[in-house]
Length: 177
Image (cartoon, rainbow, N blue to C red; front, top):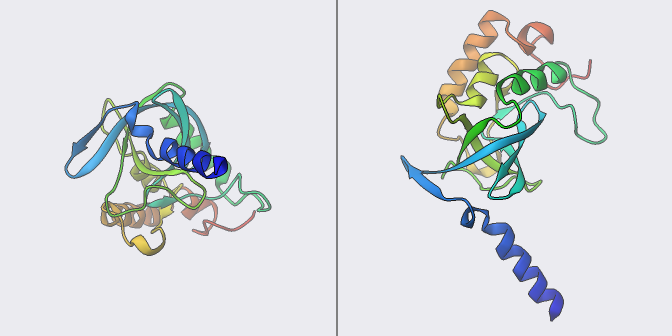
């Protein structure tokens, strides 16, 4: 019985990170303020929010892998990470924006959010796609995210310019080189 109570309590605590940091509605999407703790790779950032750290996976994009156990570093992964690090220095103020059409968490327990720079409103995922260091990615059964069309247009322009992975890796985001 104690195990069950502990599991329920852990679930409630894990599901309620917004209780310590106010969320607000913006065009039907929930937003929450955060600060960059560190960049994990080209599409994942660790943030400080509500007194704790959370790992956030950018909604709608996928970059070459550099930290997946058992997987070789993929072509362009270090440069994709460097690109994101250039945007998201430690301490940078962010807005984490949920997409009601998408799951709250991915299969690894990471928050799925759009990440925007607080000052400018810049969509960090869109920048990664424009630079060619991320590709458009639709997560599982949820289907296309709200910003997928804009990301697709950015991808087409990046590919036409030979930006990022399109020039460095012949457009193959998941080849080990």
